[in-house]
Length: 369
Image (cartoon, rainbow, N blue to C red):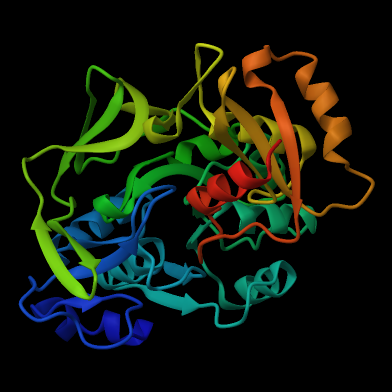
């Protein structure tokens, strides 16, 4: 489905089901929602169904938070079949503003030049795209007012370098089940050094945590239900309850959310709880490496319970991972240390550049020694 069709008022008035990115007709008999394929960082593939009202509620909250008006120009540089890209189009429709779509394959230099030419004011990017802009030393156009960074954590080193180059990056937290953003840093933070958190909760959300620290959500942009496919048959399951328990851990204080990691990636190593994703973020920051170029996963170990394995893409001799790990291990306890290194030609990723962790975990379990 093209972006132009999604800006047409007719799309928002109809009640037919749409599976974004799905080839063929929608299954018969399912609710008239907009469905997005999502497997998260782990887990089985599923389709998250959101009503058009929920998607527009999310769009209105984001537009208000980022001071979008009819004179603004949202830039689409993410795939439409992902809720992050679709959210841009929903915001354009809700605000009645201009939209510009980057049609070419991602290239930082070409994107920066095009962005200056079209006068974009707001856009959403993933950390890898921001990293590419910074690595190329490209300066942001004067027209740009805000960049919502989602789909992963943008490290502080890269974030601060981006702001120094004029890229107004704002950390955000969101998920498909919420129709896009739940929390996003405010524009008032752009004249300060970039930090990853805490992140201001948008006005359309109530956010809490349960006794295990999992993030709980309630709001008008929450998904309606879930569609699963098994052995050629489709089954729709309606969401139960007002609150949705995510797989993320966090802390809420004074309208701010601090995301602490994913509950479903935590493992026990030598009796200690460890988040491989957090270890990965520390290593990428230390290396100055692009997000997704190396991934830390846990595999079973008969002595320690689990052990950490670093799967990394082939790199030049100027930044060997083995030498970097020596520096990292010097200040880390044993249960947070990498026990094995595996080199691959390319890390498998989703269309948004998220590493496919479940696939990498299975691969590492066979290769790690």
